[in-house]
Image 1 (cartoon, helix red, strand yellow):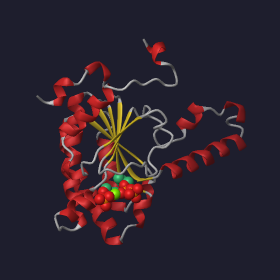
Image 2 (cartoon, rainbow, N blue to C red):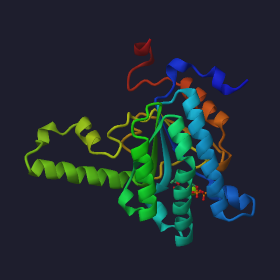
Image 3 (tube, rainbow, N blue to C red):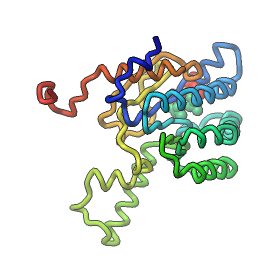
Amino acid sequence: MSFLKQIDTDNVPKHVAIIMDGNGRWAKKRGLLRIFGHERGAKAVRETIEAAGESGISHLTLYAFSTENWNRPKNEVDKLMNLLVSSLKKEFKTLHKNEIKLCAIGNLEELPPKAYKELSEVIEKTKNNKKLVLTLALSYGSRNEIVKAVKEIAEKVKNNIISVENIDDSIINEHLYTRNLPDVDLLIRTSGEQRISNFLLWQIAYAELYFTDVLWPDFKKEDLYRAILNYQNRERRFGKTSEQLK
Ligand code: IPE
Ligand code: IPE
Ligand code: MG
């Protein structure tokens, strides 16, 4: 039986974020160049988006390229950017047909103009879709996001737009790239690595963490369902005692 049928539809994580890791190792194991791993990874992205829709997740955020990933060999970076453009071109129709709204977080101005343009177009064309908010983290780094937010807030304090006393969680939230997204409920990382790698540090304050050894190109619908089921078997206490939740 598919794990999908076992999912409790009343307790689906609203916001799932995924660190899609292991493309390079997937390729290496097969004696292939890393780019083939990334290409297969793009297929896993499609499969995951479908599964997210089918399981009732409303927000899916995918870590596709970090600020640190700019330090990879130029050839790999170029190929990843080309893959982004070709995937957006190829997937636009399907995204739109399935009422998926595409968003992006990160330092997007750093993307090559071709990628920035394609991304902006798909974001614009899908902006009224309501079924699933799909956010791509591109040239994204959490520290960079926090530095940017602090600068913007400091500027507003200087100009008397907000007072120091009024700075709170929600003011900070409003200055992050993720201002329109709910907190992350479930964070998944593939490939066996158990680290956050500068992803959504503020937003995962109370997320449930799920690590799997599956390499990203091998990630299937059932893997997402399995992660959701695992999430549903946890008790999220948010600082309270177990008894208080009953
Ligand atoms: C994740 O896979 C994709 C990106 C970071 C762009 P990797 O390319 O990091 O794969 P490994 O970790 O080397 O196996
Ligand atoms: C994190 O993976 C970034 C993405 C998945 C896009 P990395 O493979 O770049 O992370 P580290 O460097 O191993 O921590
Ligand atoms: Mg990696």
